[in-house]
Picture 1 (cartoon, rainbow over the protein chains, first blue to last red):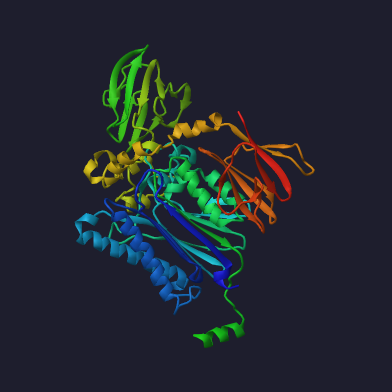
Picture 2: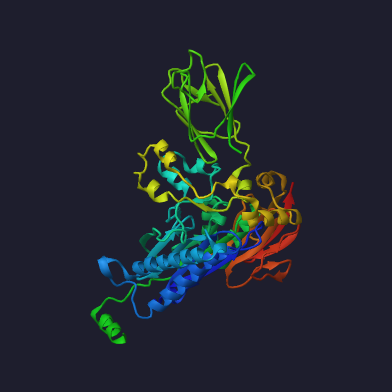
Length: 274
Length: 264
């Protein structure tokens, strides 16, 4: 199946009920299998600029590169080209935000989280920095497949806090990595096998800070037939709980396989195509 | 505002300690930060580690143990108004910073610069003290001047003009709001009732026609989820938009009529 038909994608973003402007940015493109969500930070409108640069740079450049490259190919060091592209583009976004903040004082200290997914060949490569998340619903199991780069997550990892205690912490919103605050950024990238029927959710912390994972999970499960409604309902739930922060979601449903043809004939044909 | 401990015995307040250090020791010996000179208290009895706005209490294998709210603890994540008991002495933990859910309005997401070093400490086994000793952050939330935080002013401007549901009110809304009920009027199960207790209830036949009832602070809403045709609400077909339900609304779904009403 063509990837554009295999993936059903919906994205929505909302400033929340308290804040007046939206520092989140989202973008997606089913034909290249790409989804990107970023949650910016910094005074004035610097947060919007940081998340905007990141999302547009990643989407434009990866779309462009995929015209001449195939994400499933092996690149240098045996890595998928798709993984390499994600890493390269996030690093590039980091450099451009960092440089902008060094040159212009009103942007100093701006930065952004990012979570980006690239679907190809029945696989999904996920790159993330900070506390924007990707969740997956597979069958009955709904779970986060990214781990926040945050103080709370580090405390949980060390056994200082349980997941339950973490909700009581007064140290929310402290992330240990961000795009654009240092000359280099450490990017976490994982590759997952994708199954037909999976639903993926990318969200900014405006959702998971306001709504418990269980409730997000049951909403995704109950409304799996209607992604548009699911996105709307998730944002409503954050806002009904006094959504203090911007809240953004991207939802992806896998409606079919999108494996790359592997037979000798298919290979030859695609070789001629290039 | 930093958290503090109030030391008392038999209801008499003896001393107040501000938790302004990352690591504070409680014990009988004079080198402790909080000295309780009593033989029931071990030389080094317990420690409090404070990381920004959170504090953790740890019993240092004391002879007579440490209680929090009546239960013996080894390690405990302190919450506002927790009562620590060491021998006959009581220490009340006060952290009057508003709960994070409200305070977070004013605390923008921030980045720890020392992250790479923290991350290099091997997880789980790492000593928590070692970690806190290394923590550095760019700007502590309390010290950000108001003029550097435009969101602070905007938030102030927004709150009065817009009614905002406070977390506690939201928690109570379950008990205060009248419960919505759907009663089936036709079909084999006519007469049966379905209480809409959860925030989300889907009704219908998958693939044929499904709606979702959502319970929100402003009341109940019905929204079409899937199916080839839209269900009827009061005789008229619905569309993709949610509709607020009024008492005695009639819904026709997959050939079955049902009525919505509120139970107080």
